[in-house]
Image (tube, helix red, strand yellow):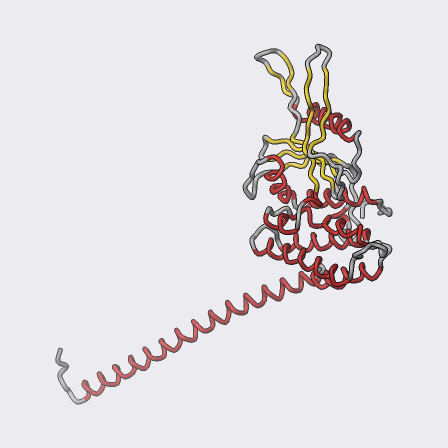
Length: 324
């Protein structure tokens, strides 16, 4: 690891999970862009991460993911700029910070000289704030009325992404897989044993298995690789450790359901080598079988040639003319 890991509070953990996903598999943002902005990108579209720091997740995937910067800035297809923030609390000052972030973003990445009018132009990025936790008071948009010195006005407005507003079925249907490490947060209110319907072990097991089925189907449909599947399982486990830190029986249940799905690099390497050896063995067996069949044909041809030679020798010995 490049730095010592520290105990993360909730906000850093959830922000770190998002950062880890973007660093490891940025194309997972494409369904989100389609959902929020109506913009679609085909697989393989170039993505440039613009943040100057990276996630700690790849340093040690077994440690809780951390983020060295809270914001996510990227350029897609060489033309479209995006800025995302992960926010746990409904902070009214967030819109002011977003204005500051976007202004700095525009100054850094999109300022251009307009030679026609002899002036500079800045383009604000496509921005959004992602809220992992449920909050009934979250607005659909964050907005701020800006009045310029000449009296002109502009309403700065950016969308909010409220993860807990999406059912598992909607997440699956829209391929919003990057929401899955956060879905366990919706179970947190039911950890209070005094509630009318507290969370049960069976309900947690069923919920986790539904999430796993979604991930398996994403792999089957080609939206995830096997490695990305493992990454999501690992991030879900990190989320569970935080959510159920005071509920050991639930934390152990998540471990029990997900642990067999995680394949260590050494185990993966052995499996891939074994699969490679099996393919080579099958290929060699097919070649050997083909060679055996060719050898059998050659033997039969040799027998025929020998029989023809023997007959010709008998004809010559007894001076029997050959008729055509």
